[in-house]
Amino acid sequence: MFKEKILIIEDDNNISKLLKYNLEKAGYACSIAGSGEDALMALDKEKADLIVLDIMLPKMDGFDVCRCIKREIKFKDIPVVMLTARGEEIDRIVGLELGADDYIVKPFSPRELILRIKAILRRGKMGGAEREILSRGILNVDVPRHKVMVNGRDVDLTPMEFKLLVTFLERPGRVQTRDRLLSEIWDIHAEVNTRTVDTHIKRLREKLGPAGTYIETVVGLGYRLKQEDDED
Image (cartoon, rainbow, N blue to C red):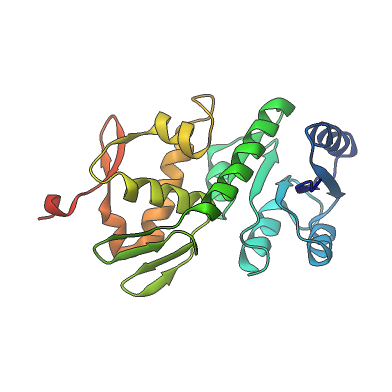
């Protein structure tokens, strides 16, 4: 039976062994890289289905590793979960803006980590089964091809940003609360800071350029996609 492969990038032997034990127990195949350089070489040899990435690594830190992964065409669609002792808001924002799909602070619950990994991998499978073209003004989204265009120009989104955009396009005019987005997009609940949602929305708007104004903030509630008849 095919096992999804997870690459653990962690220089603490005790933590990497703990991760490997729990992930293999959950049915995944795992490999470990103790540095960013080793991780990139490992990816060149065999592509992973998901990466668990520590930030505080020797020489090349996790932010640099994530940046390298997301710049490479052959790696950029691999989901990245950052697992780190750095819990400051700025670190979380940097990680998510670099394209990480999730950010978990140590100490962590192995069970929660596995649930989040399952949710991310499940979303990837579901996305491949969709057959839709979604449009709004100058914005066009080819869902099965994971292709986004604004004014005819390609826009490169992370898997999480893409899922957020599709959710808004499928529900024009309907308010999406932060808690609902956390539940549906991240498949988790309020134990995750809702600033995670705000950070992704901010980054999504920036990448969409002039089409970013289609996503509006509903104060005290969340966000929604403006309907065309709401435009001035």
